[in-house]
Amino acid sequence: MPESGELKAARRFLAEAEAQWASADGLARLTEGLGYPDELIDTGVAAEAQTARNLVTTYAGRAYARVRALLERDTQMPEPELEHYFKVVLVFDPVSAVLPPAAAELAELGRGR
Image 1: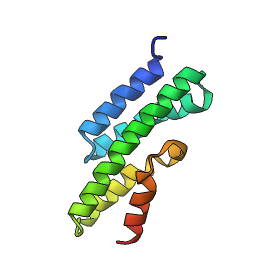
Image 2 (image 1 turned 120 degrees about the vertical axis):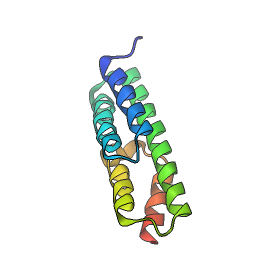
Image 3 (image 1 turned 45 degrees about the vertical axis):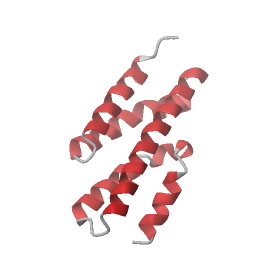
Image 4 (image 1 turned 60 degrees about the horizontal axis):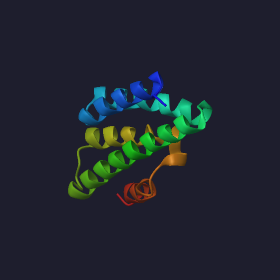
């Protein structure tokens, strides 16, 4: 079955977000890109909903791993950067049902700061 336009758009936006993830533009693309799979997970056909779920899980895993690595490496991260990465993590809240185990670990790391 060919991918829907929504999945193609989500892939494009998420790839752009990953390439620019440390910028405001990257955050905007991430937000836009996650809107498509979120809708498909809720209302799409079973196969497409599963693909959307996998797509979100993959990008969430990557984002959480990158943020975690940055926080572990730089315990004195400047507040504007820290705020940006907090916003990156928050973008995944609406799709929390498909978040990787690293999400809970990162939340714990943030509480310990």
